[in-house]
Length: 185
Image 1: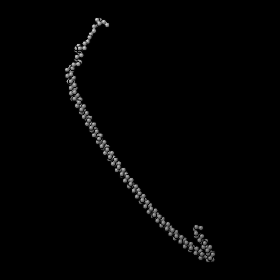
Image 2 (image 1 turned 120 degrees about the vertical axis):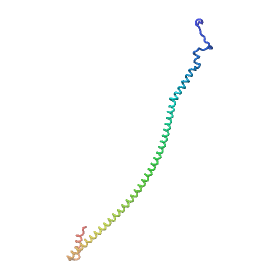
Image 3 (image 1 turned 120 degrees about the horizontal axis):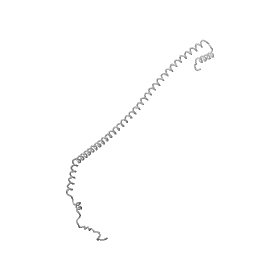
């Protein structure tokens, strides 16, 4: 290319920078003061209107959580106490049930013994009564048999006396009358 035809701009690095570049690097005091004032004003507003309610809400929440934990602990302790009481009551009920069963078994054995004794006594009484009744019936039968025997003997004797017979005929006649009176034949 031709040097004479295009002008060239040479930039020397030691030359001063342009003005707009110098403003970026140097702090602007007014802007800094305005930023700090805005920050502290915002901090004061937040402290007055937001910080205290937030802290109060956090404190209330903390207190609520603490109370809830205490109540949960108390409930847990009460539950443990109820479990202990329940276990104790179950043990006592179990012991009472065992005693009741033992007493019922003893009462049943005693009742069975009493019933057996009464049954034996009643059986003995029945046997005694039956024996006495049988003895009375036997005695009545013997009395009745004696009467009938005597009556038969008298009847036979009367009939024999009415007929005077020889010895062989007398025996035949006695056998005949005995057969008439003997109910088994």
